[in-house]
Image (cartoon, rainbow, N blue to C red; front, side, top):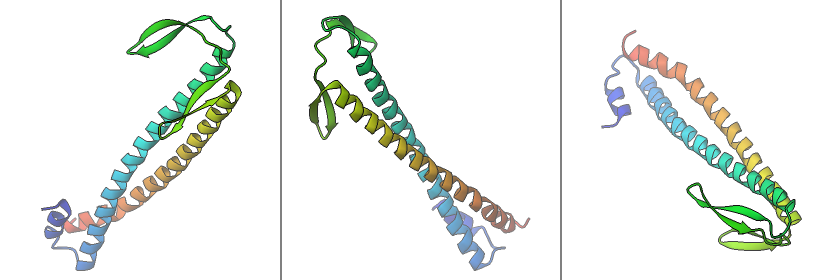
Length: 155
C-alpha cells in the first residue's frame, strides 16, 4: 500500500476535500523532489562536460606554443602517460557527435570548443533557473502539507 494511501486512511479529522488536497500536495511534493534530484545530476554532468571542453581549448592553445617535434607526455588513462613527439598542429580531429569526427585547423577548433562551452553554460543557467523555480514550488507546498498533517493528527 502506498504511503499516500496509508496517510489518507489515517486522516479521519480531515474533510474529503482536505484529504484530496493533502494527497495531491504530497504527490506533487514527491515528484518535484525527484525532479530536483534529476536536475542537480544534469547540472553536475554538464558542469563536468564544460570543464573538459574548456580544458581541451586551453590545451590546444598551449600546444600551439610548442615546436613541432617537441617531446610531450600523452595520458593513456589511470594517471599513466607515454612520451611522444608533438606532430604538426595544422589539423585537429574534433568529435561533433554520433561518432562523426571533423578535421579543423587549430583556430577553427578553438572557436568550435568555445561555442560549445557557451552553449553548455547557457543550458546550465536554464537548468539552474528551473531548479530554483522548482525549489520555490516545493517550499510553497510545505505549509499546506504541514497544516493538513497537523489537523489530521488532531493538533
